[in-house]
Image (cartoon, rainbow, N blue to C red; front, side, top):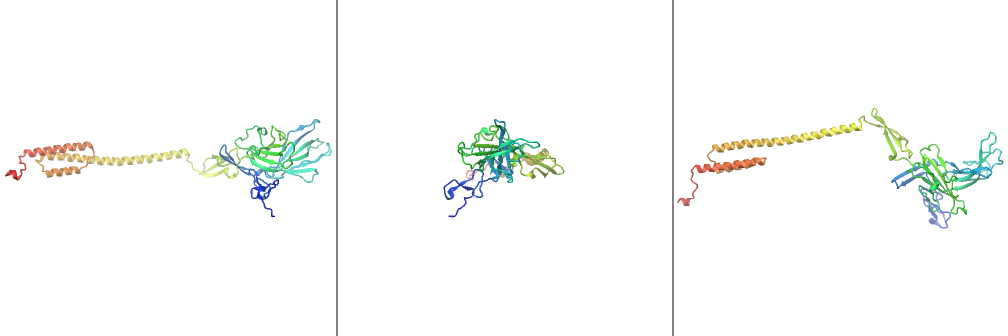
Length: 419
């Protein structure tokens, strides 16, 4: 029977007794797998923040192949001797943290450096562990003449050799939960979410830690920590753990800040000189800029300010509106002038008709009909003028009837009556 790899994104569950695809389980949150054996992170994280409806882009590649140390609180024994716990952390590099155990042959003899973060193999040692996170106990050595104080380290312990998830949530499962006591009370970039790296230990469980040992490394955005990250342990748990089963380490770094987006830049424009203007893009303090070319650019510009451009545009619009008004007034005036000329012409014709009616002795009916036809052909532009014209016609007809009666002509008599 040939063995097959799990599909992409799944890893083999070595503790399961199932066969085939059922023995494959998915990786944790924001983790990937290339060999179907272990889950890792590529350092790129996209995180949706529902509170402000914004997507944060994180780039943690700075933490590859880098180790950091954190020291716990110093404890003094009854005899006066002191010791503390030293944590060696490698966020994204598997087995990147090395804790080496060495002993001093005599309390007052010179001993070479007994703790190595890089795991030097040329030094004698009785034990060394490699993991994402390990812890050892450090004891100071009494200094001799012309020799600086040194430490020797014992009891290296793995507290994180497999990465479980990378998320902004404080709770991984019902056994791994971060509470307020694991965090310091500070206001460093509260609007930027904290990123938690959850690690588990493959060491067998103990009576005290029945569900195993876990370690959480929290990345906090701090733009002030540019050169070197600041590693701290929670103030409420100064030795790194409050119960011995869940360890918590806090890293303050500018590399824990999200990448700036278009909305995170402030644009500052310089003076326009010879048609060119410098434009500075200043990123916000809570993000880091990955685009160096955006810091300063040269663009073409004009010496006219925005206020002056708006003023010129307003003047042009005003001139256009005035020209339109003048053209409309001119067209209206031509129309009124035409109507006025027609009205004057009608009045002159009316006077001529009156004088003609007085001088004439009579007008035939056909002539009256023709006059009426001509009158109907005339155009009158006002109600007042039409009323005057009707009075004029009435007066003219009355004058025609009177002239007919005065002439003494005999009305038309049918032939039957004439007989």
